[in-house]
Amino acid sequence: MLALVATVAAGIGPVSIEAVTVAKVLANAVRVPVGVELYASGGSALQLPAVGLRWAPVTDFEVEQLHATIVLSVRLPRIALGATVGFALAAAGTVMQGFFRNPMADPSIIGVSSGAAVGAVLFIVAPFAVPFGLGLRGAAFLGALATATVVYLIATEGGRTPVATLLLAGVAIQTFLGAVTSYLLLHSGESMRRVVYWLMGHLDASRMTEAWITGLLAVGLVGLMYLYAEDLNAMLLGEEEARAVGIEVERTKRILLAASSVVTGAAVAVAGVIGFVGLIVPHAMRLIVGPDHRVLLPVSALAGASFLVAADTLARSGAAELPVGIVTAALGAPFFLYLLRRREVSEL
Image 1: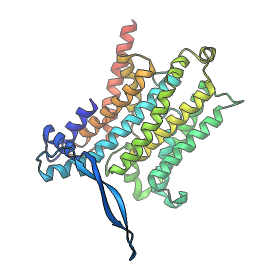
Image 2 (image 1 turned 90 degrees about the horizontal axis):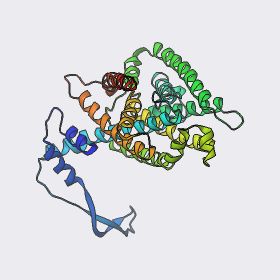
Image 3 (image 1 turned 60 degrees about the vertical axis):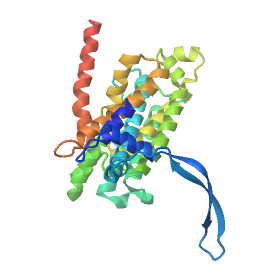
Image 4 (image 1 turned 30 degrees about the vertical axis):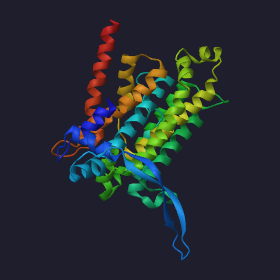
């Protein structure tokens, strides 16, 4: 589904491109090493030869150069970043729902998104207050990690982190950071438009470098989460039951919280606050494939990538381009209410 959605999305825009043409462009972009070659290196008079790989395309379909440029340079970076962010948010939401044993949980439940928002807004409003020249994304990522660390330290006592205490601490910190964001927004002056636009979530001005970095980080951390899928299954029965079957509950908590917080912080840092992806996608996939996290986690991650790419395609297809966060909220809220109603009816 992700491959199909991405291919269709790459053809939608002011210049319409057929899906077959998009597939040809993407196939032509694939390169494989076909040998080695020598080339001169260094800027001095004495240039030593260096060895490098010689790359060649796998296919050579005939396509218009304009179409190739639009797909590879304009649309593909945005699609890749959208897929990466959706992948990360849905995976983090799956882990959080299992961790808290609550289908209403999402990646921002412990305040990670709020912390990222404070960091980003602070940089936009008062960049001199952000140290080390971090930039917008660096400030957002640092705010997310700092918030997750503070919430964990508040909730942990005697080496144990009760889930209920962690949830309450997250809600309290999230509310406080919401007040900080509102205060900064009130004093943002001419920067208000930029602040509001970032808070809505967007994939504008996406670059392939961001997609690669965020994607590698997301795949690595989701892979780490997957290693603890069986532990998470056991924790669904309760912490005492998980300990009884040999699970190191507190260690598992720390690893899953850290991985979820980092992957959520990275997603929010590059795309702003995008809601409902980490809430409705895992919930919907759980109804389809069941609660086993060995299946649910990868399925939800890929479904989240597909969902966000489709939502962003809708966001940029109208007369006026919308932030993708508006579209995910508009689609996600009614769908989630439908899921709740369906569950209620089935239980009756």
